[in-house]
Length: 535
Image (tube, rainbow, N blue to C red):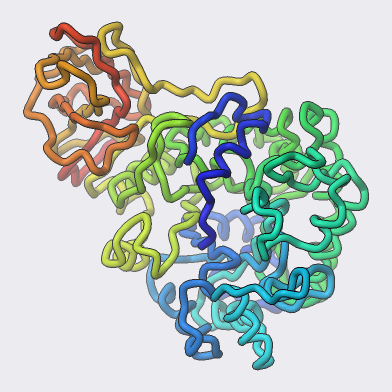
């Protein structure tokens, strides 16, 4: 998995949708015969109850050993996901370069300035190529054998490590065509600008190559890795270029569906808020209304998992779409309380909270991004294996302990609110809106607040109300490792079950005692031992 360097935060300062940021830091039904195309009704059924894993373009090659670069090693990677809850694998073959020998762009192992990259990723990818093995063909075939739906996920404008102009990941096209960047000569580099016909032609050549070379169940265009594709300040007016690009790709999926003898579906990763698309150019609502997509993964970019994705609003916006479109929730590996706040890794409890809430609001599945094997991140390997076995559908999610942290929307139009509720002045107090999905009928519910390190912190006292009802304070939590925002102290309050509502709950927190005003940097509702729920 590629590491996003701390300098990338600085790079994003100039991006319109995070201005001011200044901290470092088709789907084929399982078992369906492939010979016959899917009807619209079949597609709708296929796009429900999904647990999808996104495998990025570098992870397998960078984390596995050279002796695993063979068909047996490729099969083993797929096999770990077989026989359990995983329904779809989204396999990414590219960033700027391809992790196979491409006809339309550099391979990841190609030399730059006469120097071959000295890194496990290019070395291992080249080892497979030299052995005559195409990993993506092997993976697609093995997925079908194991009753997992294989998709390809193309990154549409990846700009990892662009602050390092000599990094081996950068393509020759990007290096030689600085005038085609969104921001030519930007000190930290810039993505390509789809307002230029040359960029669209270059990217479309790779789309065509993927269809010619591989036979997936679907193709996903990942517009969120990274989410800037048009001239700064002109995304609304230039969004038509992305729509026309989508129209051409839709024609290709229809063409190749006929050639392959089965329906090939088209999906996109798009901003979590449906109304953000028109102003960012990533107008998934319009694409759906034009009949161009079958699947939308509503997702943040990177900074934090979004625990408040309005799936009900997505369904409202898409009710007039001419063909069935499913919307599923994308989960990042981290949870961050505000865009420059310190993040923490998600846990199985935050994942259950996300899933329970999302399904309750109408999500058709859960899509995990940067939740990959061998990394021990964001959850330990033991939890990862249980996740693959048991899944995270509504019944599973709502029957286990779960957490609902307050985070924010990280991809919004310039000038729009990210709905950052944190940090908050504790003496002034604040009311936080938290969507929990179904409400529990048993177990314990807690309201928890994380507080920053300040003088007088230990002696400060607080009042909490849930929907106007005063909550009883209990003992502090000793372990603050799973709380973001550099939490120093974690206070909690007991929430009677009869006060907890399905959907949104309003939690009010205010400091009542203490000579020094404190700062709230983390807020969540937590449910423990809640085995039954009501809608």
